[in-house]
Amino acid sequence: MSECLFCRIIAGEIPSTKVHETETVLAFRDINPQAKVHVLVVPKAHHEDAAALSGDPQLLADVIAGAAEVAGIEGIAESGYRLVFNTGDDACRTVFHAHLHVLGGEQLAGFGR
Image 1 (tube, rainbow, N blue to C red):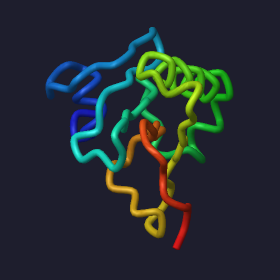
Image 2 (spheres, one colour; image 1 turned 135 degrees about the vertical axis):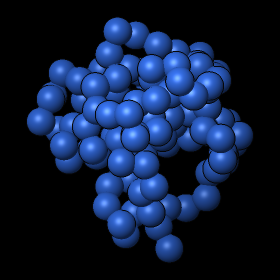
Image 3 (cartoon, helix red, strand yellow; image 1 turned 30 degrees about the vertical axis):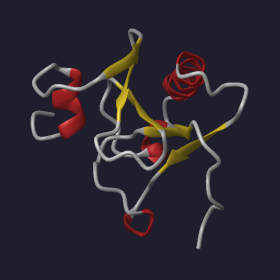
């Protein structure tokens, strides 16, 4: 999907700071970090959001395994980290390609309002 930002990053058309990569997922640093560690794990196959991604359980598992690998690489596996999928307008989703946020490296604030 040539108009999709993350598809273009996966294709190498737009630069990113890669943290981890497998055959099925790419993990790279968020350009607007919300925590000391903020990495996005995206499936290389385009799925609009987490709900669509759930139709491919193995790929969903690969994304979560990628997030766990990122936590190890970033040194936050033991101290703790947060995984977040934003789906739909109320979640402030801005890119329409499923992606899992890995947040950590510091004490995170409460969740929600």
